[in-house]
Length: 599
Ligand code: AMP
Image (cartoon, rainbow, N blue to C red; front, side, top):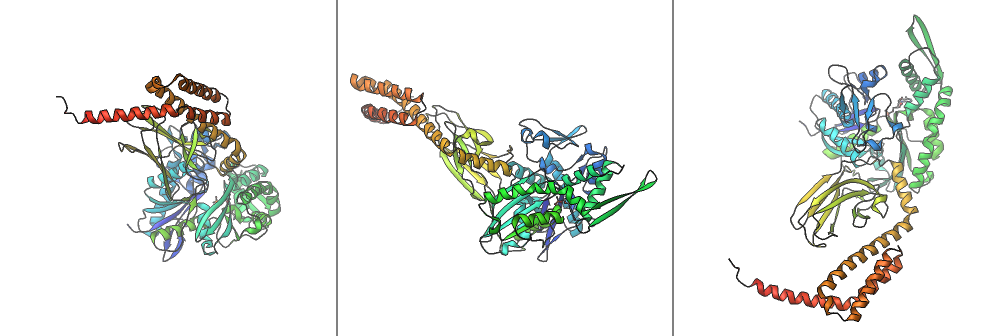
């Protein structure tokens, strides 16, 4: 065992692994010399699963038992996956409230089991290349991955036999690979990532050697596959679709450096066929697909409150950015030539390896930080959102607050963990829910501390503790909310749009809770000491209480506030009587306590 930490790009289409050797990051190849391992697993009828290029070749021939793009399913529940995004070739079991499962013949697999198989192959290949074992890893995920998706990725790494040292964002890794951590402070970087199946645009800011994600946008169903599909549909040769696919992909790749290609398809029913394609024809087919990345880029710029001219660098990630048409579109859009100094399909893995090098001590001087995209909190009495970690907090972060009970003799407190920017709990997303039991006591007596901790991997742990008994629960959140970049934007836009209503709803709810508390207290006090009031005093209190009850029905905050104040005034004498009585009682209990116990 060594102290090596490997860097892994666990991609939707392809995965890579690298390690620091003599101070340089290098990517490791498998026994066939390939550094890109297709993230594909084929389950043969008998025997062990097949992973990588061999599995990829089975995809067209045995689609129902060949799983690709498992990354799109990881950490999601049934309701998180729209039917139109369910892979068509193999069967995905979608059940509301349940993690997605992949059905292969009579067995079901969790998406992370597929990732584990891919990671195991990367580990074995790396160990064969290095001739030593590797046990620690840094793994990358998209910037928009939520807690559940990050957790599931980490679990996949651990099941493959790694200690997962860090989960880092892909655009941050790419920026490191391009050496952008050496830029001046406050540099702004756009990371344009177009792969086989997904498109992401991220705007980063470098601040004192730390990368922060300012904005992200993208489409988890846009990429080279769409171009391949359109080419297959245009290909008039009389051959099977899987043969067409292999053909058009090869042509597409060659057309990144050539202007036209001719590929011979041998031995089809005894005769040779030829497939011809020009770069012009390819671009005509690909243009409308590539154009779809435009709006996401513009949106990310708007969200980060930047103009294209404010950017210091635009870097390219993903195999599809080798295509001249893509580079042209990016240049036009951002008004500058993109930086193409790195291999776009290797940049993320290289960055992960550099981060691994920093962690293992092989490299120094770079710190990576990310921020929380949305606020995190819990629901409190009355359905309000109580923020514990505000949006844009730099992680890792730990924060907590004390809460008490709102009902007498309450035996348990429900902790509902929320994510979002809205004032009312119901308008935010629920990440998870659990109960903490405690000893029953009058309301307001129990003290429950709730602590949120987000580790360097962006994984949230919630701890709730009854401070009296020390009973506690720690919950790592496992439920999923698809916090796609678009959903995050929509949440923020909504919170701005509803800011005024939200705030007045919060003030109303808080006032109403106060009224209810007062009414109950007044009732109790009247029972205890009401007899000692004059008729006029009693009358005034009853009228005050009645006005509070009427005002509660109106949803008019000023009226209810005024009624609360009037009732508070009217009960001054009663309050004084109660205090007096309590002091007398305390004196008697104290004298009783000194008496010897009867046996
Ligand atoms: P990635 O997901 O980053 O591995 O990117 C894979 C996508 O890039 C696939 O659609 C590939 O067909 C495409 N790709 C890889 N190499 C090239 C190339 N030289 N020219 C055009 N597209 C490419």
